[in-house]
Length: 148
Image (cartoon, rainbow, N blue to C red; front, side, top):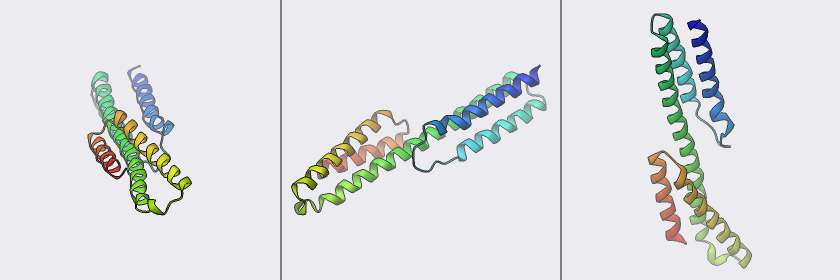
């Protein structure tokens, strides 16, 4: 009975670890290292359980491993979002140098795109959990604000 329960727990946890980040995955590349590491760690913990750990100990270790992987996955997603925000900010800064040569339509498009970039950065600042990403977003927002 204990074996069946543990196998079901491991299977359910592995399913969550594998499918959760894939559902809302950004268009950009995703680093699967954390997921693979969590799966390997869960398997190692299962082997420890077979060698004598109690069900509670094994379950606690597996849940901790999954939470660690979740933290790493969320940090990776934050870094990807930050990279997108930095890209639009760089574009706005580069285009600013040519603003005197733009016609009215191009200036309006530039203003719209830059406003969208600033709005994106502001929105990301409210939701990122990785402190380094939040710092990068703050620096990026400050840089774009200076150029506008």
